[in-house]
Image (tube, rainbow, N blue to C red):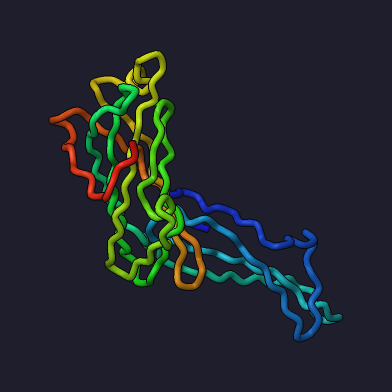
Length: 218
């Protein structure tokens, strides 16, 4: 497999059973099927090269023949993610609190259903989910071009009256972590993406936003 950013091709294993390394005998009319599995992580043009070597097991023909097939396809993004952090009043224990909003836009040509949206936080932080899993609602479906807005409340853990996250940050900036999003397509195929590191900075570096949810957990 040749990917857009890789200088060299990646060799893929055949599955589910690679079979004997010395080849497989096929009777007349018999077929052989193998499957390759590759996790698409990059947008752009991909090329799958398949090389087959064989020979006819007859008395007059024992010469090995080889042919190669190239399969080219383009991997496109299914979601556009826009995030916006904002500051909230401190919690009861004195720890800082923030709200993180994200807009998830279906930029594919097919309908998708969101399955999972979660934060992978840095040490010293915890979060509350304000989305469908927390309320017990159905998983949202998105037609092409539709947008779903999600929201999280991020809390700073407090140890001895001091915010744990504050000890490891410089310039007042706090790095939350990454946002992971999973979905399922119309044919049952699953997709997943993870954003880069998200965070919040003091006024002048990032703008505070008003959370657009019915209620925020204390």
